[in-house]
Image (tube, rainbow, N blue to C red):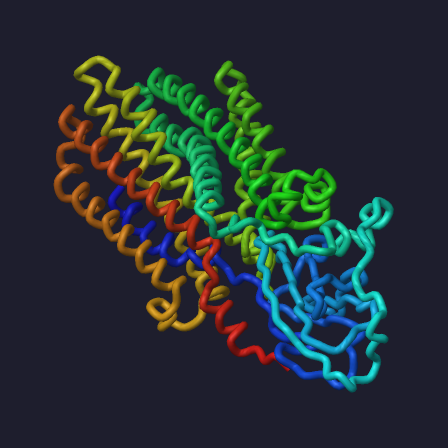
Length: 483
């Protein structure tokens, strides 16, 4: 157990970049920020640091009188898909104009901003002073047109602000924590059943009855955790709609359908829902004694393990996207195989062993712990390898560790994980020699509970890091010019 705990420190600290990649920012714009134009522009052209989802993007041009000016539908204007354009469909007057924008990348995280430019009085292409320049109200036909949906699915007079609720808000962080916790328990239940209990059976066949009992309880834990994943997924859908569209339109069916069917974030959410249903069915079958129940549960669990990558920053990586998604999936499996199976050991396996006849309790607990240790080391190895790859792919300079908000948050995480190292050393020096006795079983259970509490804190910090821009994000934005 000690080696697994110590190895996971490296894995979790390195993998932060998988779960918290860069957010899209405005790189350049035409008309440019603060520009003084002598010719009235005919389009807005904005380039971002990542490729936005057109279905979720929104531009708004506000005139000197504070009213929105009619724009055409958004279109991609380069091969990388990072530049969006919108025709200006109304004649402009002189004065100061405000460009507002809101985008979401493949990971679904909404980002917004605004800037201003001015048109001089004698500029070419201006309208007559009394010419109407505001956009007409959206019509039902316009809202239903797929080509114009990215522009007409919001009230053109007001850019949705999200009412202060975004991916970095406390509520959204809590939802992500709940979702990830449920997912890791689901993975842990399957890993405990297929690896830990199989190792235990091979090493000590006298534990067959104990294995059957633990397997049934693990299936129940997996079933409850899968239900938590389903609840968190529904909450995440609502939270995403609030963050993307604002409270006034968060429940609009057309907007939710667009978000689910025309974005990678939505496809990931649908896969998550399907995986949850398959996992629930499999765990329910396993509880009833079906020989195929755990196989179905494992299939649903694999589907669920892919989904964080499809709704996270791995899928929005500008290069090596497929390896990034695969690495993120393997890391989720590795983290679940460690933390989730640890929960099964402490909350399911050891309590069942402590219900045996008194002479058998200590040895049964020792055998369970010895079967769990190589499992933890195996999954820690997976997490470590994928974590190193993710750090190489997403991280910037080493100095960013203390020079950026992202790095400072990571240091907090490393501080928490240092407690894990202390727990591992304590188990190695003080607890392991006592395994086989009742007192040893109690001590390993107490130290395991400490690890679980630390694991909860690690997940909370990770949920915060998901919404924290990385140093690579800041570098991409800071080095970009605004022509």
